[in-house]
Image 1: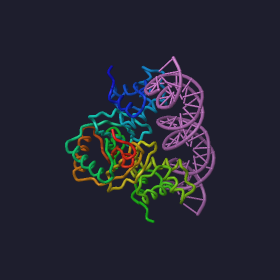
Image 2: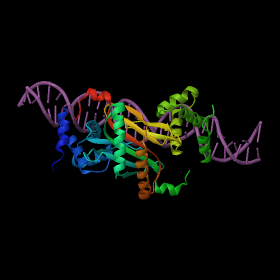
Image 3: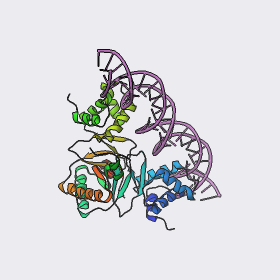
Length: 153
Length: 153
DNA sequence: ATAATAATGAAAATCATTATCAATATAATT
DNA sequence: AATTATATTGATAATGATTTTCATTATTAT
């Protein structure tokens, strides 16, 4: 069970302690590709470490988000979701059904998209001096099921 | 004060009553280009109609979102924000500072971007039979101020 | 080992949002 | 214009997610 030594380093370097709960939460994300809610993380962590409390999970989630080790998502359903911020994947596409709230993951950025995003990023850096780490695209629409249930416009 | 007759129509056509609170909320959005929180809408409405309650504002916000007359945003700061869904503007770019939570609006889609998004949309329709109404891009990064306060990686 | 202090767990507190329910306003009908 | 049926409202309680509090515990430096 090697774990993620680089993320551990990142914590240490910023002066944070490398505690069991933090390692446990990080492990969950390394084992789980999906974006998880805080509660889901809590349950998963709980299986191996029943002593770790929900508040600590929340605190850890916030810390890791600050450290940019994970990403926080919100699709308007009232709860945040978290996903490991890999070094490779920097693009996040999601389809959200505005009718039923269903969320579908989608991930296959085209060359063209990557280019146009890069262009936008350049502009943002120039205009606002913003340093971009990542981006998300949310598509909002009506899913297959809901289209059948209710007619269009 | 002409108001938005087409949005009124949309409500009526779907069998909803055209009430004073609903008109008042719609007016706020027509007068206000920014994305507002529910509380902000409540205060703005309250200036002209002190009788309208917060719960009604929330209900109206949800209804208008369902009707797709407004769009709901969430940048991970714990509250939703709403903005008029104009017929012209279908692209929403936001920069979010993961350090301080600052949100900057940004809006100048390039041809290239529009093309690549259209491509993605086409794929989504084919693959998931999703009918796309709009999309949002959130850029996450570090704003100018926070870059100065705290060194990089 | 010991000290200094950051981090934790449990529970209370907070914040945004939703549900409840009696009262009211809207739209259709007379 | 008055009446009726019912969707909508306002006030408040309830909910659900997240944060704070504080005494206790664990981590790191000494």
